[in-house]
Image (cartoon, rainbow, N blue to C red; front, top):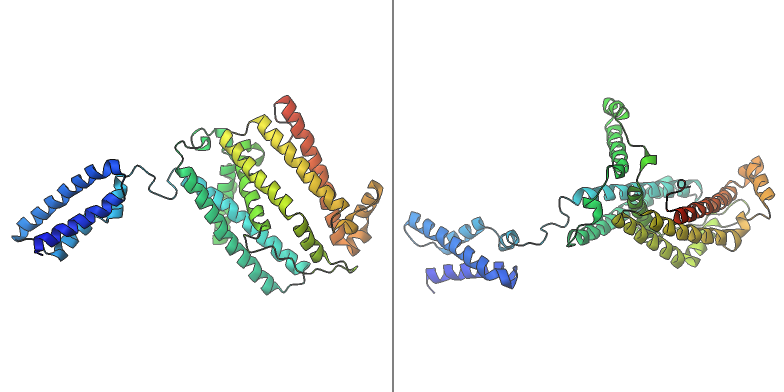
Length: 372
């Protein structure tokens, strides 16, 4: 085979790879255009040298044109990135919220393991860091998949194009908090003082859309933790003063209500995403909040009446509850059971208030009250 034949075979191979990346209706024209360009460059190079190009020289020329994958991408009408520049700031904001939630979960796990689980600080810190790293990989991966899907939708979601100024409070607050945190880590006192003087949106001014986005991210983190995607739900034995194994009770609770909690959390994430996509209309938000409040009340009522914790936290009457809450002996001798009792009772009251507010909002078609 002559040198000319070998170089033409190289060009055909190159163009064949380009054509394989393109749709049939555009490949023929694009390959013909590229062939003309490559042959023109080849002729100019050969004229300057006064001889035909050898294979190595043609290889250099083709590299100058570009890798076939890159060249084909220039002609493609599909998105050229996992997440485009318009969506990337949203992706990064959601990732920051997710990492903040993971940090809070890691700190809670560390404190509970050391104070109540009797675990050594070094071991507990290692478990917390490991859980955070596993969680961070999972969160970033899930958000990347979500971003990839959104990026390839024919019509962009409304939150990208139809945002309102009243929706911006959360973003201003979160950005200022992040800047202040970085300044604190750097020890930059002057920047911290300047940040204090910077106007920050009041969290009470957060729009329903911004609140729904935040709720979706944080609920997703809790769901991933509950199903073990963030390193598993590890609950060690925890014996209280009366011999009650709190760790065993929590493990049994996790087993008994695993699927109901998965259903509630997954539905909450989906509902919050729907709120973001639709602008969070009042009656849609109220209907969802009412249903989720009832679901949370049911879970808390089960915790009080029939869960493995019931014998530890349940009291006979409201009078007994307040006596236990206000007794110094209860907090001194049975701090953990008293705290759990308070969490369940006040959590149930909070959800009941939320249910009433949501029902009123649903009937009146306007937002009633604030979140409990």
